[in-house]
Image 1 (cartoon, rainbow, N blue to C red):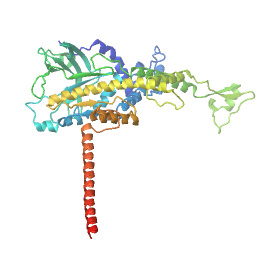
Image 2 (cartoon, helix red, strand yellow):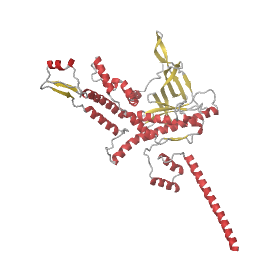
Image 3 (cartoon, rainbow, N blue to C red):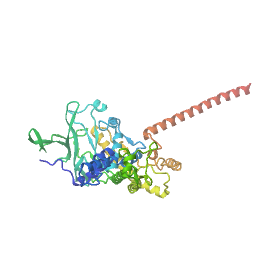
Length: 505
């Protein structure tokens, strides 16, 4: 039987890292549900019920402060402080409104950029529905039949391969694990795994095959062995809008370093590891605080007869409304050991390390940095943001072009760019004046100048709309100026005529 579910070794090696980052992002409930995976039992050899109960309390008191999610949201938010710059044909507006049938293009791009920042990798596939015959123009216009762009987590793309075609290296195989609806009664839905195999066939043309595992051995009415069939459950051979077969797989990896198939290291991994260490220190700190944080009354100098006489049932009532009788020389005090500050200090150290890694934590205002230190931190952070944003923007521009080819829309003016400059004011007034001077001198075009303004967040409208608006207003101003000049000239003619008439009289 074909090994459709074979997972590449390099992905298998990364799965534990992906799981840690994903669990960290999901937060406290997910982390604590893994129990000893993330918080080892202090005395693992003691299997008694008492020790198990103590561990449960130890785990419950531990605090998970989600530095990973906070960092990720902060970094992703910086990228989308400005709107993406993109241009698509009018026919592709339904794709922009609902890129995969559920979310808009902008929403999916945000999720993709977040996944690349977190895991260093995700996958994008441009797909087109299988329809009988050619779709009508009305169906395409209404978005009933249109391309979609599907996004996949890094662990869903389990296998891939490449081949050389001339001087280029292209993908020749991609295997994706998906969830497919198996059955439903209208309320409960049952899903099963399916494997989507994208490859180039013997004619070097794109095809799609769908596999699911089928039961091959049944014991007592229940299947216990599942295998793939020799033939796929379904097979498609997509074509473009002209009916031509594709000679490439419309799939791309998106990485934190580049968009090649090789796995990039996850940017959030180091912060996730520190976050986990912080969680373990928190468990020890909270345990110590619980044990030594409760003062214990201590009485000395008491005799057994004194206790029987004054302490009813050996009970002592404490507080301002109760009194305690002590014999001569007897003492009463509260025993409260010094707290164990070592776990707390370890927690603070890890918080500082997370900040050094670019964590978006609220820092005390008392911490001061030199301008050089601040620039070094910003450069390190922006290098990650700029790399991921550039890779995501490049991938989506390619997929919009593929979507246009599926749909038969023009591809020449398609553009998609994510901001890669993250300061609020990237251009000083002097730089803007210099930009204007360069346009007037003919060194750069108006389009180039506006592109620079848009990247800096100063201009927001697409160039064509802005220039149309500017040129329209300029034309209106010129027409008003000309009209005013004509009125003045006409009035001057009337005044001159009146003056001549008065002089003649």
